[in-house]
Image 1: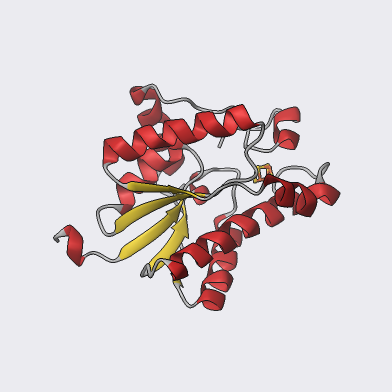
Image 2 (image 1 turned 30 degrees about the horizontal axis):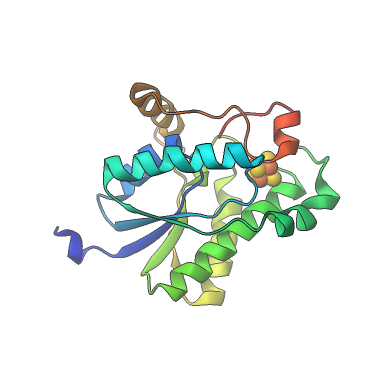
Length: 187
Ligand code: SF4
């Protein structure tokens, strides 16, 4: 299928290793644009490092990457009550919702056929929760949400193997300072 015949998909992306595998997969069926909106990634140096690595992946695979400026203050305010929650708790629900809502809005504004997030490749993210939220924000904005669970078929292992082979930076915490303090996983 020619690229121009493929549906246009806005994919929320959070880090280079996951994008390398998942965007690579999605491009077989969609014209993918990456959407980097991650006000949860702190501190600023880490944010810039992850964005820089993602730009490398975008150039390698040949897709456009849009950076939506991170409104970090808003993220901090909305998650403040849940700072001590464990990962996959209430802080993460707010964090997913902020990012999915903004991606849905950008997809509607940009006239995309559908949108998704690559976050479900992580073993620490529940695909059913992300899918429910994505469907809800998609309905609100009138854009179709692509439901997925990219960790299936060894997705996470493939992401690790591919990114190691390319020498990409792999973070060792999810993104926010709470996850860094607790020394949680890197995806
Ligand atoms: S642990 Fe990850 S998903 Fe949860 S709030 Fe922090 S950055 Fe967001």
